[in-house]
Amino acid sequence: MSTDNRIAAVVLGASGYVGGELLRLLATHPDFEIAAAVSDSRAATPVGDTFGHLSQALAGLDFVAHDDWPASIADSSKLALFSAAPHGASAAVIASALADAGKRGIEAHVVDSSADFRYANQGDYESVYKTAHGAPQLLDQFTCAVPEHRNGVDTPHIGHPGCFATATLLATVPLMRSGLTDADVFVTGITGSTGSGKSPQAGTHHPERNSNLYAYKPLAHRHAPEVAALSLAASGREARVHFVPHSGPFARGIHVTVQAKAQSSVTESQLSDVYRRAYRNSPFVEIVSTTPRLKNVVASNMCHINATTNGESVVVMCAIDNLVKGAAGGAIQWMNRLWDLPESTGLVMPAPGWT
Image 1 (cartoon, rainbow, N blue to C red):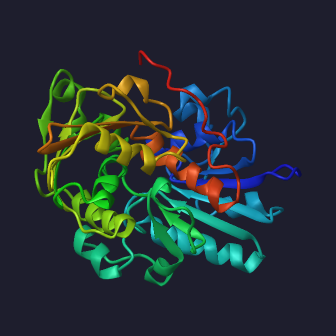
Image 2 (image 1 turned 180 degrees about the horizontal axis):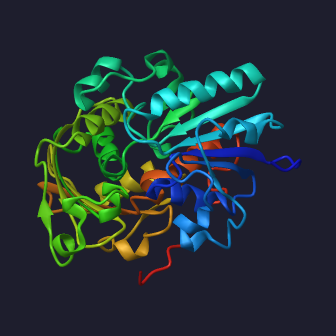
């Protein structure tokens, strides 16, 4: 770790897709400096061997094992801890890291991209994920929300919503706040194959997914109760979420379409005003005049939203990059806030287009 004033950044679960995106974004961040990329399965190997696109940007950086990374922050007083560890494993690892930081007198903030701190209640988490929570004593130290729906937080740490949840919440919460529609929202979401993680599965096998489109877990996906709980927290109104996710024939991105019935006749002007007011101070949300396109947001932290109505029904479309805005970029956006940095720091790269 260098002796300048940058904050030591550690990425847990650094060899997966979200971990790789965290490393890519942190490589050029002016205020965070990568102190450790943690991965037991890749320990002592160069980051560039796993992520060839980072071989030059992170030359000389090796993965380290979980037992060894604390030595990398021995001279640090501030720690930005990002966890991309799997659901069910992240909480215990975070608890150990925070205990170690506390003993050393290191100020620490955590953003967890797993599901372990997405529910405020231990029972709710265990009901959805069918496993015991790894650190229930830390639940009251975490807030879960997308940054655009919270001006501030009174906890030191953040649980980042899932990628489908991020897109759906950005599209849904302004509707719930407005009262223009019924509480029933019907959500169709299409995600790229990176959303399934780095380990190969039948559903992400290229011959199966290429030139194909199919739904999975219709009306039974575990993100639905997460969206309902977070929508209630952000809007004060409970949404009844009817969610049908789909696997798309592309690697990155999420496109979500939310439909709801209007309480009474609604105009395009009313609807547009709801979204423009909701996100007028949100640097990463753009209300676009045409239907959103994935190529306009992929590899960026941007969210494009378009809302339309025929007077009786409302349709809201939202496009994000699942690995950036839906995970790594949103995590850095939150971490910027936790350290009182401008939230757009290190995240202003435009989408490359034509990906």
